[in-house]
Length: 399
Ligand SMILES: [Zn+2]
Image 1 (cartoon, rainbow, N blue to C red):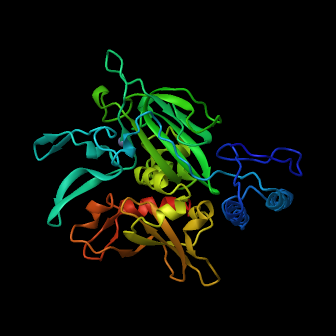
Image 2 (spheres, protein in one colour):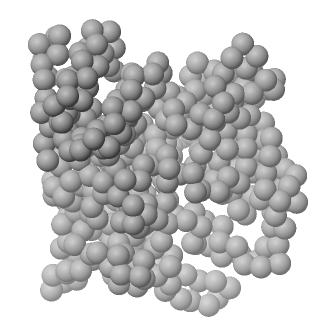
Image 3 (cartoon, rainbow, N blue to C red):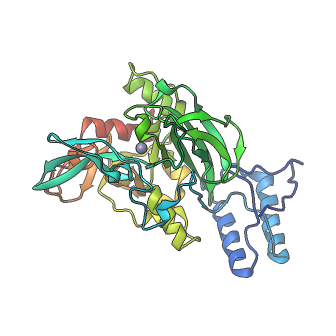
């Protein structure tokens, strides 16, 4: 459903980022929910910093009017995802070989083609560690297999936007990324920006700046990029947080010999959440928000970062903040999943010079095998690796 918009004090349509506006509620209980969200988006440094001054007043008036008229617009949309292709086997018992594209594995000389390697998470590169097998390589998205191929075996599946949004990046040159040809769409869900990424495309039918609606065709499935062949053609799909708008200068400083062709939409700057679990959770509970969803993720380590005006996460994702800063605050303690996905941010009085590990989960395997080599140590004791420090510095770059 579409929204009823109003003209603001500027005489222009209000900015609606990340997708088409829509009616936010049709009854009293959903109405109060909408007003609560709108109110949350008014907090300083909260989700919608672009609404300021007189426009903010208009926005408030509109919400007040809405309370009496049973409808209103929403500045952004509630998270509502469609699958990117016609393959919907994810919703039959959570996926399996009908949904996920297999990977080619060679473990100690034994070759196999497990479909599980197409799932999100630590599903690749098994290794014996800590008295068992651990999977050391993290897969930040899901690999969805094709349903249709032509006589030569080329995939024909159309790729569609998974939600309303704006195309913010197109990489048309296959060799410019491990993702091959890829598209990134910015979505604004419940006041914060998230980024869907579609990789290994054969052809792209979207342009940067283009508004798209959920289900709109943006590309055709392919097998461009690294480590893929025609037999294993798939779309690699991610849903991400963005770490820093200063990414390009960080990348130039730490990877001077590795050209970055993809600006801030380089995969290193995009941090993928468990999109398969999100699809399934939204199916059970369509009212679920991403912050609520993230509460079920397990923290694996915590890092203290010196207080910095360049730290974007608390501004871009204010729902992460569990303790707000005050005069005694000298650092932020950030908790991360095993893969480095930030979960919570807490103001702290601790004085630190650079990124410092403050906690890591107790494990028998070395944490380096469990954290894509960002933390090393075992038994609850450890430290950041050089890679870990470098990754953390991106969060407050250029400090
Ligand atoms: Zn993939």
